[in-house]
Image: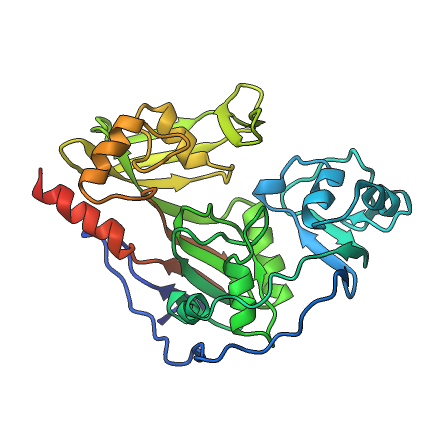
Amino acid sequence: MFETVGKKQQVRSGRFEPRTESGGQTDRSSHPRASATAPKTEPAPNKATTASVRVETVDANADDQRVDNFLLKTLKGAPRSLIYRILRSGEVRINGKRAKPEQRLAIGDQVRIPPVRLEERDPGQAPLGLLAQVPNWVIFEDRLFLVLNKPSGIAAHGGSGISFGAIELVRQWRPNETFELVHRLDRDTSGVLVLAKRRSGLTALQAVMRENRIEKHYLALLAGQVVREKQEVDVALAKNVLRGGERMVTVDLEGKDSLSIFRVIERYADATLADVQIKTGRTHQIRVHSQHIGHPILGDDKYGDDEANKRAKAFGLKRLFLHAKSFAFSLPEQNYAFTAPLADDLRAALDRLAVSK
């Protein structure tokens, strides 16, 4: 739905959740649908060459990361010798300037990566049943952006044993178009995921993110009854890797600043539904902040409470109750506000909780 606001257009999609808010409906009539027969794909050779120079925009997940480590993660299968060779040659540039291996990145940095030859495993064709679901995830589309209501269990992108994330599925669904991730969601988190269709949209939105002019809200079901109607959690977070290779985030005075604002929506017998607005985008931020205030998110196997999670299963909650509800920002000629309906399984869990109050 478009509303004129001065000289800008106001764009809204989806609807807010639950009970307390309402919004417009999305017209999907113009969205191409996945057919029963998926597009044919040619098998990839064992060796793959990136066809041209690529430019990656640094997001919150790579903020303060060394450029050599960033390249190792970005160029899957590339040996360290290749990474350091292209760095020494000056072919890797950050914001137009020659990069050094130890140089640290910041959100919004533009990293130029030259064409390289890599060992690459072709993930092949996505399962037809999964591919056919993708059109139903769309909550908004225009010439710049495609916005999804990403289901829980689907990663934002492939990697680390995951063949198909949301971005790979969209690219297979519409193979003749270009899509890039603007931001990320954890695999277990559902909700708004924004993809850029044009470079101009990607760079414009990344600039807005750099200036911290994005408004993002989540719905989280917390263990126990939260007493305060509103509270700000302002603590530094640091990433740690455990002995088994598992990545954990902890509160650490030497970590990066992070800020979340919790507002109570509804209290149940032994749980609290909260709106969480994030002012920063650190990895696992809401999950760790919830744990920090003594009310971890129900269904969280990493940062949650085992006993509380067992009780949550009794009312049908089988996964992390964290949903990216809304994502809003302004570009020079247009305001955008995307909202994603709550998934049926999470809504059903709330309905059961309401009965038991």
